[in-house]
Image (cartoon, rainbow, N blue to C red):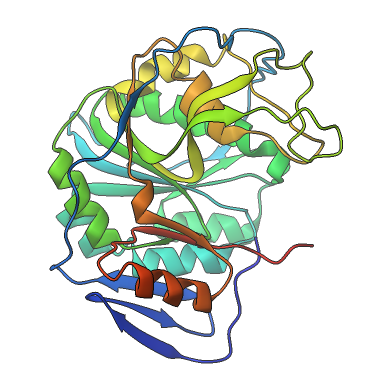
Length: 320
């Protein structure tokens, strides 16, 4: 997605938080005085009547062109692994995230690592980036929206193989997401260490679109159920490391959904289909998410809800 380009700098002080809008894109941070509501809605994945074991599975082996050797060292556990889906050409997005969110001191303080997952072919530029930062996982496949599900399959399998269950929480996000990294740490510290745990903006009864003219169209032949059930919005979600092994085991058994020639439901695939049989418990932290079109919309949200803590934000790209 194209970065939002703005030609001005604006500073907004609201509810102990500020948003700095720069020529690159917005960033934001909250003070330590923000409050979290511990009464988050929870939902169990134990649902009947949703068949996730039908065709097509589209299971293929994907060559890995590059991956860091230091995700999990020896037998040491990792508290946090940030996994960022990124287009191979989005170097500026990765540079911004390393600088603002994943600086060395931040990662060391929180016993965390970051992994940028890209597709595409080998290149001198990407090889230099990988050698410099040691945080690139590259899969040999066209780096298009159509390939997102395959990228997820690759990193899930690799991380499970090298880390097993030695990661407390995995945070998956996209490279155009804005994050309050400190607020995320405070929120996760409130949850402690949980098993079979998923935290995200949840869809509890995902709608199946049967209109052939919609880009989200699903035919009854491809997906027979009337509901998509419970799953996470894909912009950012958290899950506990103990879920890695059963998720990888499910790769060969469950389908994923093509909803058009250019869209695949990778969020449903990872956070519903691959979690089939895990009894995962979803915690809805959707109040900490925003998807907006402009700074004006963001300002309006803060005026209406001055104590709201936003952790993940996404500025929607212009329609093409």
